[in-house]
Length: 569
Image 1: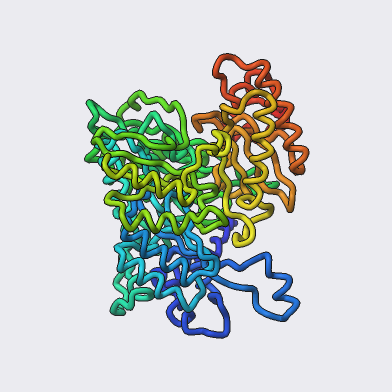
Image 2 (image 1 turned 90 degrees about the horizontal axis):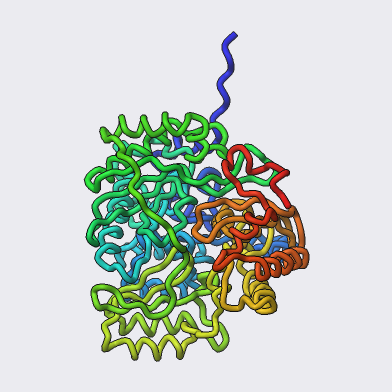
């Protein structure tokens, strides 16, 4: 009797039946009986850059009134490398103010912008506005290659421009080819479906896929959180090729030890002219070898563990017709962003602004959104979003510096009192809009960091930092599983505490305590930071200290020892 094949996940059925991502989205848009999308369309809209959400703060109240939840969409823009013009900024600023429930613009950890609270009747006009501005939201969600990240380097301007150009080329090359987006949202002419998806296939990828281009020595895009990474290698200031890393990813599921975070693996060095061939070969190898039966094990990291790194690399070489050379030497010395004014080698000035949680909104005594619009009206360069939720006013001429300085201070966009610790901390959105949130993150972080700042101050470390990240669930959006201290939501007011990542983002932390409260977490931070202050070696980061003295054992191979209970202190 032959062994029965496992059943494909239902997502595979709906992709195959979607007519290249069309589904019945166009018809659903005309359904005024619900604020949401029905059946398969709930999932299919993700391929068009949207997630259906509702305001969870209002669920119980609306249920008591026998009303449907306040359903709305989170819409995410595609912005390879995070570069946007002032004119584009003004367009999206206006739409956010007039046509979203919350009025805010959010800078994300994927180096793009997203809008929360777009109601279904406003969706087409939002997509058409993006198109008019030269933007779109194609493939910013769903089982495709997502927004391509690129180091936001404000110093090595020539190198950054070259790397950014490759980020755009990779993004365009790996986009879905279906005409569904144009037909549904831009009123494109409907045709008999002759769509071809030579790279992604008619059923697209087994799971989401993330790509970065990074310029050492700054690991500001967290390469080990991503499926495919191109590490820029330079010669005399010019980009000459890339080291390729494959198979990173941070998402996991509580209680399921078959899921785990994983660092990306070194595949080797390639010349510039082979970049797109290698990108396509990695994607198609994952397309054909990835797990389409269990979505929890469908990411590239699990494919590498199942088939083996060498076998995966060899298949990529065959498909690309390119042999990987030995990895070229490179070093990461830090991550995060260079804040304040920095002069580039092109004699232009760049101002990196700290945007807490990436949320650009007019707050009392801090009208950030109005301030950014005022700057966009006069700025002659561009804006660059970072992968750490911050924003760079880039390409400022020396004669315009003083004017920009006045505006950023007037509107609270530049504050000299923000600590290094606050700048090194990050959270995902979580409540009230994320349907996956188990605990608070964005709304929790500011007050929590104030308490951590007090701990740092009490131990004489006010001018130091710990990479600290909070996630409302274990899906990895805030990259907590590459932090020196990571909090991962387990329930309302409770988190799993992870320690032992490193400052450069090349080591995964291990769980130190499970399902504990804020007060317990602060007590542990107070104790370990106090010890760090007394016992550290010169300039030793917190994450390295807790490993060295045995508070926590390092994660060496997350597929095999991440859940080892003996690793906890």
